[in-house]
Image (cartoon, rainbow, N blue to C red; front, side, top):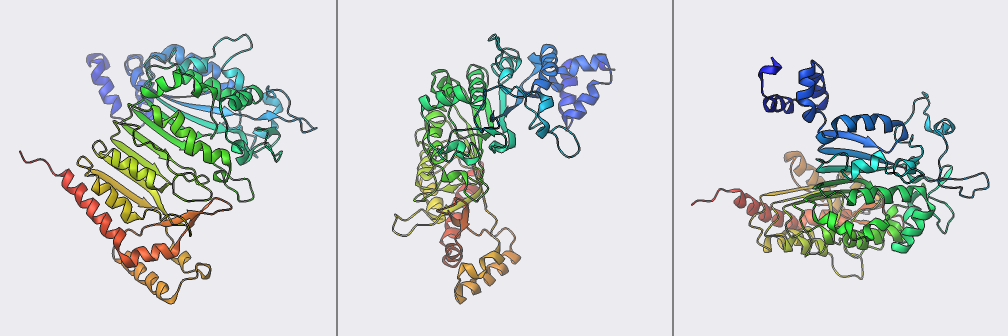
Length: 475
């Protein structure tokens, strides 16, 4: 039967199957189907820079490289091994047999930590180009137009038998990989000394040479620049992108201090993201950004934080914006207003308003955000979604919140309202702890918002504009 159907029909049938496994199973039924469905089966593949995967990836690329459209690449990172005298050795890695810490209690290997000889996956000792570089650059995957790049650090950058950075505390890793801000000279020095920084530089260099990719997804992006971003090829690469998604890496130091408390992390969010990403993304139609819980982006007047740095003139063609785990601030509102003629969808997920710090300029309220968007006359905005961080009513009643009797009565009203209407929005106000950098909810401001009702009224006005925009034009 397969030989009686055209290849495009067979491909259309395969594309209706819900999972890649289903497509593989169908293609395995006979040789004709295997050949006919190869473009569908191998359109989305996963690759790594692991030595153990090299032969299998090479065979796959050799047979099906032209079919690759979407590549998910996991870039494993290792710190420099440290000898018994606590001095960093060279940039080479132990052999797999020597890495006894890569085995769990069952004796099985953890694929996220079994990244031996990481640097050699990009350039061998004689300088020949590796299989990983050839995939990322598009030489062996000439039709790849979507790339998802995930950075996976051994032990999540913890200095367990290795060293990731030279920091003033001599700790060698953890949140201190961004202890200070870097310039091109500092990045070059780090790439010379640390293998993981060198691997990242090779990765970005290969990516920036790919002229076909239109969609780039970054997961667990470390807050460290690379010399590649300072080269003219990088802005050129960014200008060709239509879709960009960034999810930041973050962590804590084991004693409560979050990544956002380091100067380098703050500088990366406030200065390096706009300099090396936002300012060059002229062709983007969709942009997603997800903060780490340990490095929440946005918010004015916070001691430990970084305000939004989306230049109002950047991303002039943007139609879809999705931001998650962030504070909004004046800079973000300026960006939204500047794009009122192009933005069709705005999704603010687990979003927060930053409370005004005593003695500083008053921060924007939720009502100020909604009214500011409405005043910009967003005629094409037809999709506005908003979700708040989870607000536990019981936690707000704890003694440390120091609520008045009137506020406790308000809590009871809120519980009753939410019980009656499960979709009722309770607007989140909070701040970053000025010592540790974690998010603290502001119970008094949340209750005041409910009592005054200004935030809810402004939200309903904006949603009415969105509802009207969805109406078909009567011509």
